[in-house]
Amino acid sequence: MRGADQKQVSMYSYVTLEQRIAADHPGRQIRAMVDRALARMEAELDQLYSTTGRPSIAPERLLRALLLMVLYSIRSERQLMEQLNYNLLFRWFVGLEMDDPVWDVTVFTKNRERLIAGEVSQRLLSSVLSEARQHQLLSEEHFTVDGTLIQAWAAARSFKDKSDPPAPGTGSGWGGEVLLRDRVASTTDPEARLCKKSNTDKAIASYQGHALMENRNGLVVAAKASQSATVTERETAVELLDSVLEARHQRGERKITLGADTQYQEERFVQALRDRGVAPHVSEYAPGNRGKNALTDSERSDERRSISQRRRKLIERVFGWSKLDRPMRQVKLRGLKRVDWFYRLTITAYNLVRMRRLIPIQAMAS
Image (cartoon, rainbow, N blue to C red; front, side, top):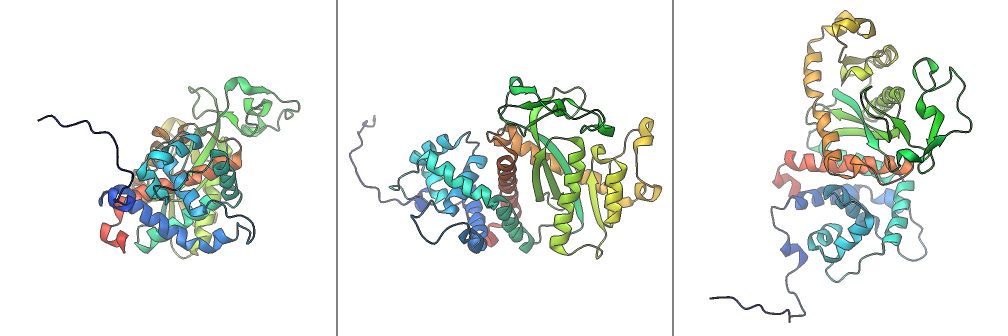
């Protein structure tokens, strides 16, 4: 018997948003971890707001909504507001009831700027890692570092010659070579640089994302975005390593290892690791380029080095996940501070997705 095409006549729904979301939906586990991380940040979030005036959008809802942009590859905040208007799953994740009005996109953007100024994404990353540490998911000894180019929201035609380029011998290249990025700047995003990862690639307007990963489960323990440059990749790697070592008071207590590709095979970087008591498990150049290798025979023969090189490939999953069909493929924010903030938020989202598979459901609910 053919069913009738009945028109909508009921005005009320007696099914709550909580009941509409499947019990085994991945968002439930991620939402539980996000809520616990935000609860640990309560005091820090209070410091960002005044005690007087009109109430703003709750920062917890702002962060959940921004995480949705990463998790579901929403290309803009305007589209996010449109989705929140009719997508019940999104409303439940953010914390909106079915009848709650959706924010105006300009109000949402203005409130987001407050979170950027307060470096909230870095604090959220640290708070999420606290839960990973409680479940003993993090290695305290073995790490991997790498970087990737993040295409900036600027066209190649926006790059014009600088009025005051550096003098010969004072550029950002090897030995002070004046490179193309030293001679031109974008009128759309002045902090973006023309850069390429290999000689055969085309130089694109970009920033550089850096990640420090622990080798046990492939979780990122430190992340940062910077202007694109080869030397910056190594300098930022040391900076991220220092932040992890100082936070955990591990310097001098355990033998720490750091895996990296040949881009980090440079004498000053390797020596910086030695000075910190870190074993440099850096990939070496082919036999024809042995002059570029900076490792000693004892470092080269370290039996743990081959393990570090195998685990090093896990970090490529981080960059692949964040750039395959998500906002990091070409970031739609301009300026280094905004790009850095959103990059750390994306890394936090990756850790949440990864931890959902590592932490048992029973422990997640407790």
